[in-house]
Amino acid sequence: MNRKKKHTSASDLIISVSGVRGTVGSALDPSLLTQFASAFGTLINGQTVVIGRDTRTSGPMAYHAVLAGLLATGCRVIDVGVCPTPTVLLMSKSVNAGGSLVITASHNPKDWNGIEFALESGRLLAEEERVRLLDIYESGGVKFAAWDKQGTVEVIDTAIDRHIESVLNCDWIVPDQIHHHAMKVVIDSGNGAGSVITPRLLRKLGCEVVELNCEPDGYFPRSAEPTPDALDQLCSTVKAERADLGFAHDGDADRLVLVTEKGTPLSSEYTFALAAEFLLTKQKGDIVATVSTSRMLDDVADRQGVKLHRTPVGVGFVVEKMRETGATIGGEGTGGVIYPELQYTTDGIASVATIMQLLAESSGSTISEVIASVPSYAICKEKLEVPSQQIADAVLRLAVDTYSDETLDLADGVKRIWDDRWVNIRKSGTEPIIRVFSEAQTPEEAQDLCDSTLNTLRSLMERIHN
Figure (cartoon, rainbow, N blue to C red):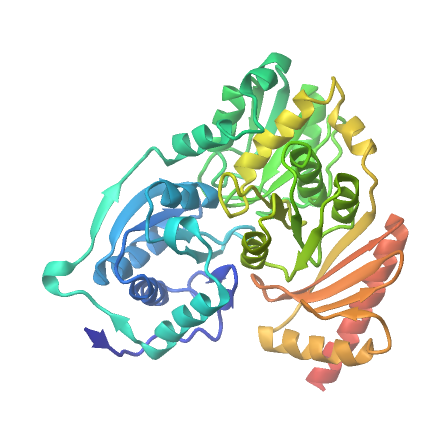
């Protein structure tokens, strides 16, 4: 039956293509989680839902709150426990579930948590479906199940093994070939959801594995976002262990960042570029990337003779365009890569195997030598904290006027474009910040472009406050 009830306001949350996120105990509380879960259960008409979570200490609280909302709307819940986001969505695909729900805040700080939603067989929500979900939440139009039609819970503990098996069965992965090279790898999972699955996968590929921050306890020893400046420990460990390379995940392991055998952290942009170059030698097809992704993808598309499509930032937008174009690969410059043969979401676990296969086929080249053969650009990534999403929107509106005489792409935020460089200004969909990404021929030019843009944005924000 239909009931309307008072609920926690969503005004202080970050609600975006990525789902719902907020700081635990303030913007994100148990009642809100239950309300969103019951809205989702209503959206999918009480079908089967696969649910999993990352390692955050607030995960058990969020799990029980979410579970209440799903059971109250009659859902059959399959609980796969602590798993990476791509593992949960792949499990949803394998059991043909009506939806899936991941309790995670991905790369956000450890005091955050949230929910990421997907529909049948792990399909991310399209724009109209996100609007319908929020409308159910805001209107209180939840359809609760009667006393004799409440939901059920089934626990399945094989999701990680199924994910590994699926990755190893991908057409472009040859486990015996990787095994033959017996490479040494350091994996830094940041005590997140990749802490168990990635070391296990690497060992199945015949690698000698050095585990770093692979205790899945949610106490992140570094930033959950594996930016180069957060990976000092990984870099030093790779050098000390004389490893062939290092890997780092974000909190829910849908992203992957690389460290060379020299202990040099690479921009997250390289993960997508290397994976795309490699995969397109096996399977021809288009590439889909966001407007903030490096020009390296343009070069890859040119060399492979395929088309590159650009979308707004957000995995959901990339997936929609991939389905529309039948693209072979897609992703973002964050280190998130989508392999449609496996599933339509960013999969840091599949990227681990892909990079290992690339190295196995590189005629003994090191990862540094592979990188040296790729035309590269200097990228600068900065951010400006803002009081609220509303202030961020106002700053971006003023930025459009400020730069109106320049060549602009307004598909996502404000992207200023020149022949040899670009800078993109956009509101984050997952944090109360404005992101500023720039790319140029040299690190100095990229940094100068970021710095000057940040100065302008600060001035615009002062105008708003005044």
